[in-house]
Length: 601
Image (tube, rainbow, N blue to C red; front, side, top):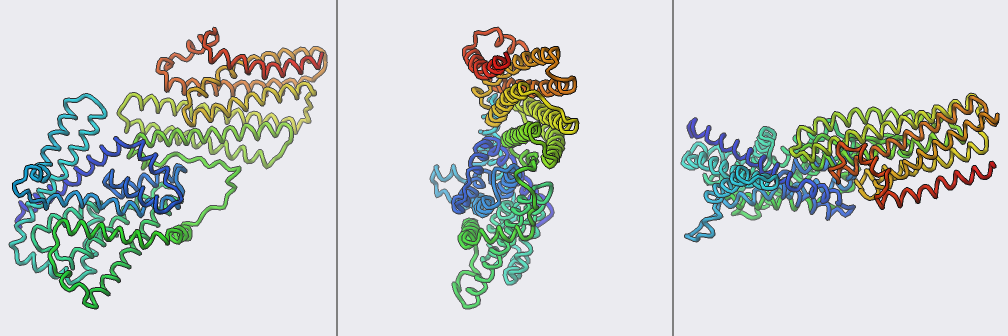
């Protein structure tokens, strides 16, 4: 094998890896939302989780990519640790699909036109021709994605054929045959070679593909292949360890530990079993037999399948092991905000990153709503411990907003469509609006502190009025958070009518406050506090209105950049949904205020 053959081999490997990358990206882009839905629905049933991991990996052709997505979903709170364990097991099985596809190299047409078509030497150029036509001549995002899949498939097989052609002369080299025989008698050495090479190449599928290419030399015996494939499986653990240890949640790190433990335990058990069978003379014709591409693919599938079957009953123990190594924090999950920006690993699938960003910001809205409720409670029943919780959560929301902005700015470089860019703008504005709701909740908390310190007392009438406005603001905030979480257009349309009612209530109460001041029914200090509370409550409703317009513009593009005119037209009347909801809320809340006024008179 001369230097030119080595160059051809390395070039073939490069094409193989690049083809896998293109095809994997195309498949992920084509099925991003579906991948999230499938992975997110993995249940407590371990077997179902294994099947899910297997199918997803079979689609995107990379167990590492599946684990990356799983880690991202764990960090986002969509999956828990137990679900991830079964997905990891399934990912190892799913990755063997690549080797089963590569076995097409073994096809002998025997003159059959159909079989000749499915030979890689025919299928690869056909796939690339179809791919380039879809990419260059059909102006459609969906067709471009499909074209990438075809191109990746064609490049992958072209690289594989180059590798095969480069190593084929080795079949005539006695030195190469002697080296392979020596490795075949040293299973541990073969295992280490598979491990080290996989760490270097960073792809178990590529390494198995290389072994399948080498099988044309006739030097790949079962003695040599089985430990090498086990080493390849161990090599993927190094990649997983790196992926799961950088900037991920503790459960994400535990997922990496589970994957490593799964592969290490499976390899040790299999090596022990194989050594025992070989030692007692079982299958005497197997060990020195020459293995072709199909045999290599079958053994890899069998190894990963049997390992999963054996270890599925012990999934709980793997979880306990990971919890022992990465210990959980002790914290109050009820009161402390658990805000987390989606994992950057989800950049692999921008559609999923966008969806998880929406979920994370909606959760921030929930935290802001809880802080608002706590602040309102403080006005009636002061508690210094609750003040600490509000301040801590506010700090978390501020940090989250900054981190979320950076995340979305970086994500904007990954998306390709104007629609996705508009979605990112929506998310960034919504995050800021929810953060401002949190700010106003803190302002209300500070007013409550002043009420406690200065012993401010409101009249019975003022307390009743504040309660009605507070209930309306809590309702509009709750509707906003829920509508944003699902981007519910119909729910979002309920927000602006209630916001207008809250504006009317605030104007009415400020007029009544002036009357009380003139009548001497309240002092200046309590009056300032009363107005301050009304102002903050009104501004929270304004932020909810802003978020509602963002949700509505996501579906109705005519609202984009035209918020003021849209709201102005609503207020003029004529929109049946708006008018009906406005009248309902007026009767409910303004009716209550009217009852309080009638009591006074």
